[in-house]
Structure formats: structure tokens, C-alpha cells
Length: 329
Image (cartoon, rainbow, N blue to C red):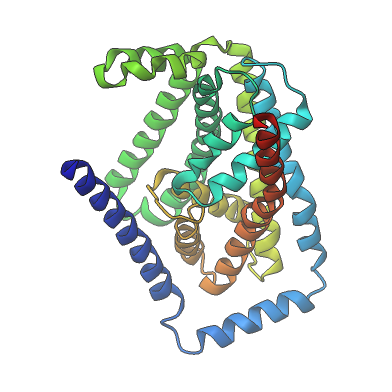
């Protein structure tokens, strides 16, 4: 019991330390300059008074499109478990989004989608949810590698060619390995079965091996569709907040930001808030852009795509709880 308590204490302490470190780095990156808050207020006011405010509305219109792609993915994945309509798949995504909002790495997303299933074998959905999230990660790595390649060639290749070549090779190896795993998901199940401590969980992830190559390909296309909606939203917000670049720089900066946000471990309790902002400020800083302009766009993206839909998802969470009570009664 003492050992378990100590482990929990150490885990909690580690999470708090990482969160505090992230907040400290954000503070150092943003507010060390004099009159930073005043500058930020001017940036926001300029964006509100700009003739480009219609871009904000366009980004907002794309929010349901973004999560609609995710609902399509879950509709494809979930139908292996039990028949479901697209509307029900969308509702499950919203419940998962809300519960995942307050958990590290959106782990609550698993619980939300599992609770929406009617089947008694709900926990078998864990494998389906994992393969969907892994597919989204593959899409992020595919496009993000191209974005980082742009920065390597432009800023580091001349001074550090060997390091640059090593990073390029690493990105290629990572992309190839993830694609192989995705299209040979039975191998992932076999790996779980081969590791003795993980064998009890094989039953819950076995469904990953049941998806065909055609289904995985459709899943990857949907993941790429959702990715590019995210990318367009971020670029529109960057334009709104006064970041002026050429199309290649916009795309590379956003793709690189999403890549770093996805591969850097995070335990933030607010959907990885912080990692994306630091990554965006670093990459767009290399392109000569002001940190506060980039931060404004990044925070707006988080607010519109994560915070607002999570608040809307509370309605579905409350309905879910009421429905469970009704069944119990």
C-alpha cells in the first residue's frame, strides 16, 4: 500500500513539475519584454478592428467540420463494435472531447466514447479508439515532417549538415515505421500479447487487427482531412493577428508546430495547452515573427477548437448521465 501511495505521489509531483515548468517557459517567452501586456492588448484590438475579422467567422464555421471528420472516423471504427448512426458517432466524439479536456493527453476521450456504447463489451472499444488516435498521429507526422524539413534546410543545413542529415533520416525512419505499424495493426496486437504484463489487455485491443487495409486507408484520408482543416484554421488566425508570410512559410510553420506538439510528452490538464504555444513561437520566431502575434493565433485556435466545443459537449455529458440514471431506475 505504501509503495502504491509513493508511486502516486511521485507521478502527481512529476505532473505538477512539468505543468509549472511549461508555465514558467511561457512566462519567460512572453512577458520578459517590457510592456508585454500593453502590446498584447494592442494586437487584440487591431485584430478586432481589422477588415479581416471575417476570417474569425470562417474559422468558427470550420469547427463542426473539424470534429465532423473525427466523427466520421469514429463512425467507421465504431461500426466494427456495434451499428451506429453518424449522429450518434458525433455525439460520442463530443462526450469524449469534454471528458478529455481535463485529462492529460485527452485520456478522458476513451471513457467518453466507451460510455456512449450500448454493447456490454464496451472495453473492446479501447483498441478502436487507439487506432483512430494513432492514425491521426500518423497524419501529423507525415505532414509535420515536411514542415520540419523546410526549417532544417533553411536554417540549419549550411551550418550543421551532418546533424541535419541525421534529423532527416530520423524523420524518414519514424514516418516509415508508423505507416508500417498502422497498416499492420495485427503486429501491434501481437506485441501486446508477447509482453507478459500486457497479456491481460489483449482482449481489449484485439479489434485493432480486424480493420482491413481499405478501412485503414479511409481512416488515414479522414485523418488527413481533419489535419488540413486544423492547418487552414491556424493559418487564417495567423493572418488575422498580423503574421505576414508566404504560403510555404505558413504551412511549414503550422505543420512543424503540430508535429512538435504531438511528439513532445505533455501532462497538461488543459489539452496540452502550452506545448503548442511554445513550439509555434519558436518556429515562427525563426521566420522573424513577433511572439505575441503567434501566441494570439495559437490561443485562439485552442479556444475555438477545444475549449468551446468542450463546453458544448457538457450538454451531451449531462444527457448521458441522465440516461444512465433512467436505465438504473
